[in-house]
Amino acid sequence: KKLAIFASGRGSNAEALHDAIKAGTINGDIVVVVTDHADAGVIERAERWNVPVIVIERKGFESKDAFEQAMIDAIAPYSPDGIVLAGYMRLLGPTFITPYENRILNIHPALLPSFSGLHAQGQAVVAGVKVSGCTVHFVDTGMDSGPIIMQNTVPVYADDTEDTLAERLLPIEHVTYKEALALFCDDKLEIKDHIVHIKG
Ligand code: GRF
Image 1 (cartoon, rainbow, N blue to C red):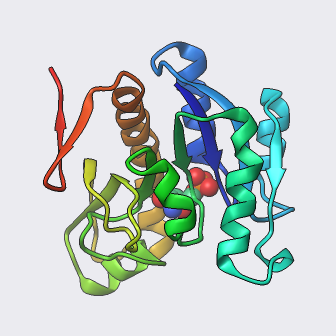
Image 2: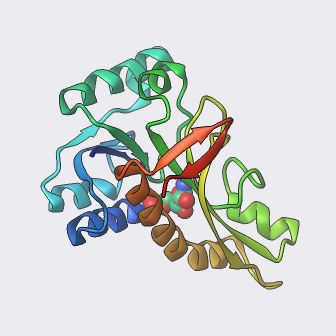
């Protein structure tokens, strides 16, 4: 499948997915990288991969819809089969989601529906949970609310901080996203009543 990766920052999840694609464990091809930050670390990664990068900053547009329509128009020439949000820190609305319904994936650093939104690792630490983890899910118009594809867990220790938990969780995110994206690219995922089934 042709994949568009959206990232706002460092891009370590994007790098992990790129590695898996190169290793042949994901039947995908990253055709374009989109970011909303002109200084995002993911840009130099995409340049290293020789993948086109499109910077689309929200501040250039008078409305969220105009911003999202610009993203739709910018990626159209690449005709992606899937949109992979990898540390993309904006909520997408119906203007963007509708044309790509059930073809947008996201990774969230908590066990949804717990701790949706920002600073999820910090929320888990403050809540005193003993187990947290990450969630790969399809994106719908809610916040971190789409059908769950895959989850994996990590222990949370009493002396953890947001940063120590985030550090423990990040490599697990990479493993989880690689596995989930591989299934998506092989058309092994189907959604029935908000529940994702993996086809044999
Ligand atoms: C990851 O922890 C991801 O779960 C969250 O933001 C972080 C992005 O990290 N959405 P990176 O840019 O993939 O390194």
